[in-house]
Image 1 (cartoon, rainbow, N blue to C red):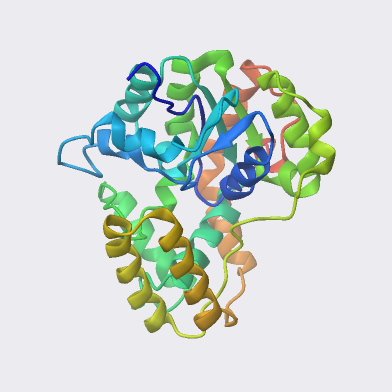
Image 2: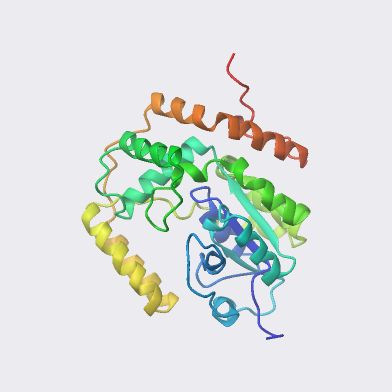
Length: 307
């Protein structure tokens, strides 16, 4: 196993905060080898809430980097790692040694709306008729302490409490962890990637030539029922088909069922309600980041308590 390549650069989350774009931008750098699948999900196997079977052999993980040709970093991006807790964090440390970790954060109210529209786009929760109903279900589950069920699309509220888990990442990885913000990535993606390249010690001049168009933008389906069927096929194909075949299926499905329109918009009153839900967590997150030297924070992390 001494010559086996596995990741030493991990985008660990959070979901719906630009991890697809971050992966695509960094994977273009000649000193970075991106995994054949953006989300390998390997370390989710260490999370007892997501998997109860044995952890796959390390050779299974290494296959995602078999195309590496001596690049300085091997990169993967699995956003569900972020809220996986100490078992996932400790497994990454044990298996990968001293990796560099990137976590992207986003206004949790906007993140929740994006999670809702994404779940709709993939045919999840088809019996939930509106964002208001979705939020009501999530709040009830949160009050009752319901633990996340993998792939049920109903733990979006929990993910936005960044203060619940970001400290554990800093405690374990310290200066080997870098937090970025989707708001900055949208405004000036090359500036964010240049900062990351400086942190990683790789050539910054390359950044000017990168394709910095957004990736993984949610495509709304013409039919949610067809989207639900496609989701079932996708789960089965992940076990049976190689990555190239999976990508071909995704392209064919996108051609067939994308182009629908979202009939809802993010109601301002619901936004204010969600901001109130996250207010205390956001303030704790802001204090944590400030203590780590992050001072140019987005507005949602600098909102003061209500008078």
